[in-house]
Length: 293
Image 1 (tube, rainbow, N blue to C red):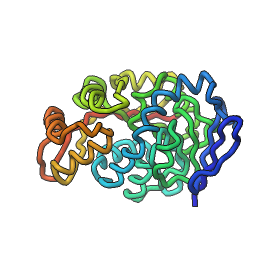
Image 2: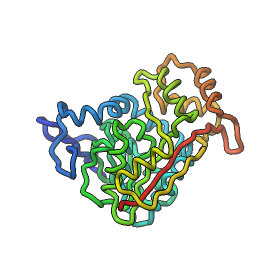
Image 3: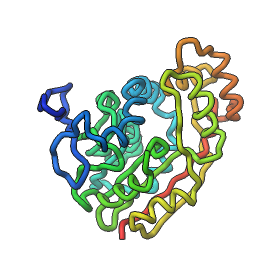
Image 4: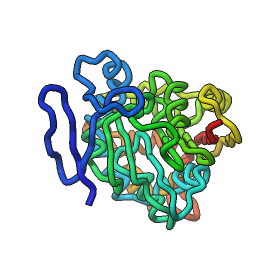
């Protein structure tokens, strides 16, 4: 049974739920707590943390209600990790453990370790054995520890995406793979997030979306080899138009004043339509992976 322990400055340790989650400092595994007044914590955690402290629970609930909706997205990044039955891997910006659950559904080992910048988001679900509150650019693990490391749909919140990618590669073991996946810069999905989602949520949305070449460059700064990069127009698939409205409302935490019709019109602008597998929403993403030098 996973456990949680949270370190929080002068208050020390407090139990939460039935798992252990630690809050670590930047660096290479030293375990002093990140204080509330630590400038590094303010810069690197604030945007992501404030966003998902507020709506991470809804995000996880949407993924639990419709676990197959983002199956293509999950399969794409999992294929980059090349997991085997004995793989011990880390999911960074893991949230409620969606990607780990999808790995299990595909007969792959779930992530045993997870990091996220938001404690409420991390506590909203997950199959990991141990988790910690940490930003992607400040991972608290020794070098070359994991057989694979993933970061899905989070790099656009990173203050320094190059630093985040360097950290992913640093903690990836020899012969392992570090993989990132995110919405493609200039895509309909990026405009939807920074447009409709920004207007219809209390937290707003100010993503920094990049080109495929940018992604490759971020990994290269960390000393990467055997890079694999692809831009894919995947589909989010829901049973019906009505289910799509429910899923998007929960996933993005729209304000109550947002009407179903407004969501339907926004989905139409994304190119959503009925298809043979259900109600399909195009979602253009980029996936890049590499092994450490």
